[in-house]
Each structure stands twice: as structure tokens, then as C-alpha cells.
Image (tube, rainbow, N blue to C red):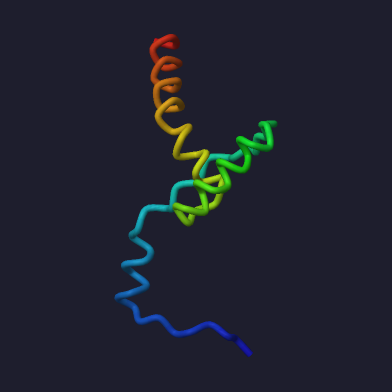
Length: 77
């Protein structure tokens, strides 16, 4: 018995015309050591913003990473 739901021909046609979804970039995890006092401050700020500590660190790193990527592109050019 098949569990597929029937899709009308017009919808199937539209789905087939969509471009393929982009493949997400492979990710790697990094780990850093910070003093407990800094870790507690980061944890408290993340809790205040109601986001995970990882997301808070990503937000903080984003401007520097953008600048670093631009510098790397300029060196390669």
C-alpha cells in the first residue's frame, strides 16, 4: 500500500519547474576556553536576549567574519 498523497497535475508541474534548493555550506564546530566569569557573563547575556549562547557568539563574530572574508577575497584578486 502506498502512502503517497495525490498531487494535482498543475501543482506537480509547478514543483518540477522550481530550481533545486542550494546545498548548505558544510559547517565545522569550534571550541574556545574562557574564564568562568566571562562564561557566566555570556550565559547571562544570552538568557537576557532569550537566545542560545552559540547564537549570541555568532552575532558577535559576524561583523569580523564579514570583514575577514572581504580581506581574503581582495588578497585572492
